Amino acid sequence: MATRATATGSPPQIDDGGPGTGGHAAASSSRRGPARTPAGLVGRPAEPSGEDGRARFHDLDALRGFAMLLGILLHAGVFLVPVDFWPVHEAYAYDTAPEANVYAWFLSAIHGFRMPLFFLVSGFFSAMLWQSRGLDRLARHRLERVGLPLVAGMFTVVPAIAWVEPGGSSLLAWPLAWLEGLEHLWFLWYLLLLVGALVAAARLGLAFRHPAWWLLVPLALAPQYVMHEQAFGPDTADRLVPAGRVLAYYAVFFAFGVFFRQRNLAVRRWWTVFLAPALLLLLPAGVMLLYDAAFPYAGEDWVRGVAAVVQVAFAWLMCFGAMGLFRWIASEERFWVRYLSDASYWLYLTHLPLVIGAQRLVVDWPVSVHLKFALINVAVVAVLLLAYQAGVRYTAIGTMLNGPRAPRAAPRGRPLAPRAPVGQESAPQESAP
Image 1 (cartoon, rainbow, N blue to C red):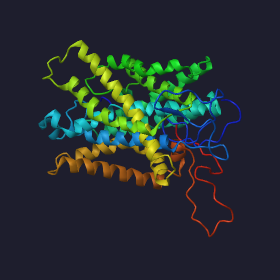
Image 2: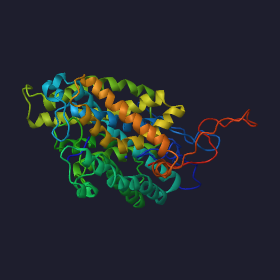
Image 3: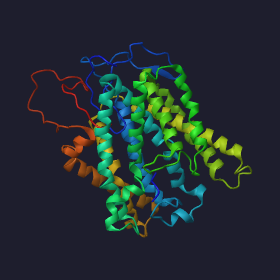
Image 4: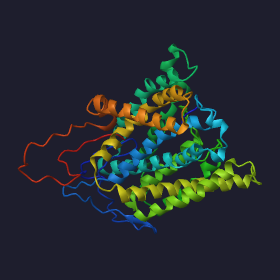
């Protein structure tokens, strides 16, 4: 089935959280000092802001969790749009004109930037772990937090998807279903490949600090132009043999994230305003160029080129706009945000069999498609959150995904000493990639 659609010296302590991330805590910056930044960007502090040498990027950690949760929304809505690869379809998908199908617009917007954003943030945190712990620790950490969940998912989640699909494979074939495709777990495989490439490049002396790395922004046009699928955004490929065009596309965003960290950059809050032109101008323009058969120049080569420019511009503006937005709204630590960020890895890895099963259950219900969409999302997330709290967070599974987590201790009277500021816990924790 087709797929559905992460310095040497004495290191600071790191709480390493989320797939594709290197941690909540900031490593010490480059010894070259603050980098010059183009308009709209600002260098992060030269040293971690905490008194014990620790600082947390709560905004990027929350953004990583948000990208994961958007994936659940995307998959929950695919049965409402006319795509051939999905095993379940609501009549609404084919009875509604494309321009009037709100889910087609919604899913196009998500698909156009979600995974580029994930790989950009992944590159940033991978570089941070490289700076603080070195290349050997980076490689080992990614194998533990990405490789092990991938292998576990290949023999549990992927067979579960094969079982729940209509007309799925036989019982004996389920354990090897991953040979036909990794399903939504493909991103873990691509992330491992990119981290391996980063380790190899770093060992060869590549530092990712030269201003020429800004050319990665327009370079994303090359792989986007040769995409095969007529979709707003990149192709999705879930085979073990990577699709070169897809791997190259995400490599651009991953490498830019590494450069972003190596140059000690951050996005200003006012970049949030660019979400509006991306969603209100670039998205409609791209959809028209790709899908509108009435467009008088549809199918011509130059239209394909313009569509690639629009899609790449949309991805970058949405990435920077989302980073600015979360810098604005999520810079401070909140327990529930960190909890959802931790849980989002588990939610995303395990959601797809439940989503497809729920879609098969409700597809013939005589109720509004909007109610069906809402029920699928609420039910799947609720079930998986309960499972996360009861049997994942404080177990070996949670340690594999996010590192060890200790239950919050109830206060026992008045503390004898002042509490440490938020984000300055006494012991480091390492969690997911």
